[in-house]
Length: 93
Image: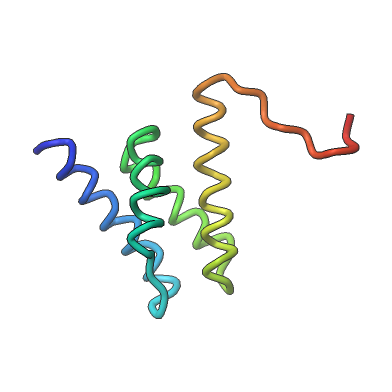
């Protein structure tokens, strides 16, 4: 199986995880290409799918908030993998 096919399968699985919680919602092509695919390339498909399941379990009443939470999980994992110190909110030192 090639890289592009593996990515396609992972995108499908991320979408399926999201649609289990939000059957009326879906991802735009731009979101898939600009956000989900890069996450998959950096973190791996199974990890990104797991992150979507975590986000859907944590946030159950808002598709937009679930996506924000999902993106936060993925960004934090990428920062951690790159040994980048997370940004501190203003006023916390």
